[in-house]
Length: 363
Image (cartoon, rainbow, N blue to C red; front, side, top):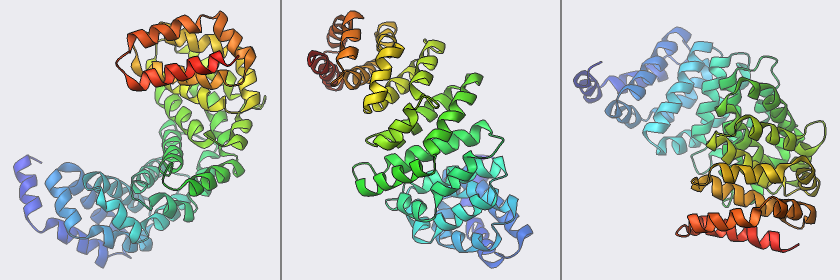
């Protein structure tokens, strides 16, 4: 539609009519399918249309109405996409949806349609948007979203964009509560470990990165870091010889030496994995020290990579004399001096570079 027509639609009662239809025909699959599609179109096409839709209190109406028809595949698809768009259009929508039990019904619908890749993709995106509410992660956790993720990632056929959605959601549920509710974050990490999701994700990455998917590698690395940060149980799972996340990291660095974003994510993951003593020792014998230095030397002008690599050097050198020696022989001191000179005006980079020097000097 032209912008002029969309503005007219926004100024009319179209949004209110759509919301009323969703509410009145909540038990009619065919009408609901068209009503949710109309709501999605209003939300995605124009800012004013999205705002007019939000003003109709659709966030209060939608969860209860959706509960009646979630078993209809097309209805679930368009409802998930509508939730995604209205949350993007108005950040407060996530809080209103959570207050009206949306996380519970969204997870129920996602569980029901785990066989459908398209519905799964948008259901995961809807959950990610709900995480933006202050209580969103807690609501999703109480609705058994982690158990649902375990089912999704255990499906025999893994479509890349669904796997990416799983990785992104894991990162959100683990990270959103860092510094806010540490107890819940630890509980979530532990439950993910009990469900063997770190191991399943690592196995998926070994299979999927063959396709050279930068998105999968980056999002998978973020998810592994989120699940394992300050959690030795998950960290040790990833370090087992049968899983070997360290070997995977080395493989990725060698295959994508020019991909700066991938290297940033891998260095960040190595910093987390090095929190575990056995993983840290494995890094020294597998050539990880030299590979991290190679990343720094190959991309000397990258501020973000300098932070990630210096963080990795510091973590891998902490109370690890063998790794300290490998870094020393590899020219770590000279490389870090160059980083400090190159980014002398960056407080963040100087902080991580100095931390790396401190850890190296402990030996």
